[in-house]
Amino acid sequence: MEVKRLRGYSVTFGVMLIISTLVETGGAAPDYSEALRLSLYFFEAQRSGYLPADQRVTWRSHSGLNDGKDQNVDLVGGYYDAGDNVKFQLPMAFTVTTLSWSVIEYRSQLQQQGQLDHALKAIKWGTDYFIKAHPEPNVLWAEVGDGTSDHECWMRAEDMTTSRQAYKIDVNHPGSEVAGETAAAMAAASIVFKQTDPAYSQILLTHAKQLFTFADTYRGRYDHSIPVANAFYPSVSGYGDELLWASFWLYEATGEEHYLEYTSVSAIELGGTGWAMTQFGWDVKYAGLQVLASKMLLEGKGGTHTTTLQAYQKQASYYLCSALGQNNGRNIQRSPGGLFWIQPWNNMQYVTSAAFLLTVYADYLTTANQELICQGSSIPASELLSTAQKQINYILGDNPKGMSYMVGYSNYYPKEVHHRGSSIVSVKVNPTLVECKEGYATWYKKPEPNPNLLLGAIVGGPDANDAFTDDRNNYEQAEACLYNNGPLVGVLARLSTGQQNAQVLVRSPSPSYKIPYEPFHLSQSVSSSWKANGLTYYKYEGVFTNTNWKDLKHLVLTFNNLKGPVYGLSPVYGSSTQYTFPAWLNVLKPGQTLNFVYVHAGRRAAISVKQTTYSQ
Image (cartoon, rainbow, N blue to C red; front, side):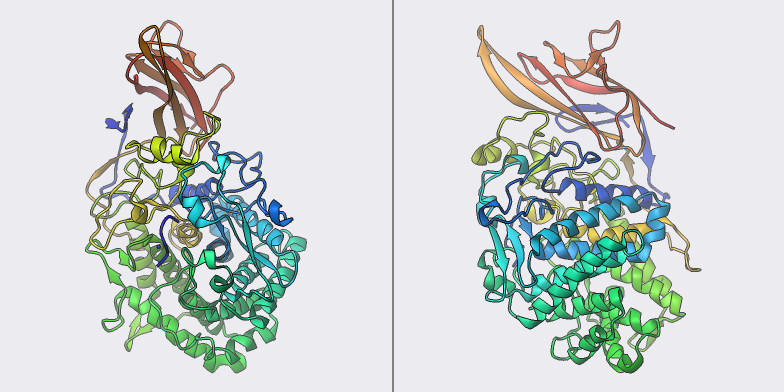
């Protein structure tokens, strides 16, 4: 997050790529399975701490290894928030809650698509950190790093020299929002792991119960206790929604009646049945908890709380009807191209969350054999799902610009994402420290595509008129945030399976433009230069990334205007211009990168992809 939250043929991007295949999108449905696969890569790009052996985003390395050390607590791990290197607990926990909800609702679909294991790992990476951050019942470490000092520098996470001070809430400095959201995340995650790892599930549930009690007993705004958070993630909605949200999730996880009783007794006091919303996100949870309450009602679990749950459902209907444009004028604004529009900064967070609530509610209605009532009219579940699908299609390229706002999906997507790690040469390519201001001068201001592909990232997206500028300096539109992807995973899992519960997905008209399909990403940049014998020599560092879903088994690159040696690639026998995999490499797995270097006196060589062979 970079602003206060108040916050084929040839394609040229600094290096020539020759692409032999074009994908005709006119009349073709989006590839939801591919989008789902990519969406889970982004979580790995945001990892902090010691990276595992099976890390798929290979341009990242270990980072934040001293987090918490100055406060004598182990806070290594978790996720970086967005394009910066701060760990903000409130949005991180919301991400884990929505990702867990995605798995709870669409576990079988994720399994069918081969993505369940990756989703579980993404959740556990968060909850493992939450366990560390909650060392005592009434203590929660709610931030690591300072947004102000972090934003003064443009550095890789692996290089950080900025403040890593940690900030906590306790009985004297309460923070009901962040404690409540973390309780919700751990309760939801406990459901996810209940069958496969019951011991771990129980650990999560214990923490969730303690955190909820802490949040409710010692009430107070977390951004008052941690003022440095106020400039970036202020609690505008207060903590009432998080307390209800956490209690609903604890009821879902335990079935213990007193949690449902809490949501009923406190419904008016905490705003659960009073607030009618047109947004759902890291700050305002009311629409989400109202949909969750409606689920209980539709499942016949209301009992003595039926009247209160009906009041919750009324407000859920307000949100859903506003998304459908059926709320008597009080609707979510849409761009001319049909995109939900809430705010200029990172608007896509509200698009993915809205699509998720529409999707799950459509399935709740179908299971209960009911319809949504908007202003006295009955709306079939299929219309909710169709509306969600159209929002996802917009994200994936069915929009006036014909651009995918998911990085790596199709060929036409944002190349200058506002993201420190993605925009600076990988530490594995050049381990030389990139200093605080050097990063701004050398990498941030460079008008070239990022050298590292941030696969699966959902950027902030276009403005209210569907306009988008692919510029690293355009943080409102070009920055990607962790919580954009949490609810998206569930929607993509649902859409990837097509027909389900006797409900047929409505294919929206596809755009008539052609998008070059690029199953790889190739970039190069100058890393150093020096003078010798009256000439200026340059060291160019290249990165080739396999963005396909298949193994790359053979590659030939052609170098034109090359006047020096190439390192990291093997020359093709009998050719002076063609290079292939180094001798030690037989295959490049999906998402993996191949790094190479060449040195010569002159402008960069023109590199083209001569040949690729993928596994069948």
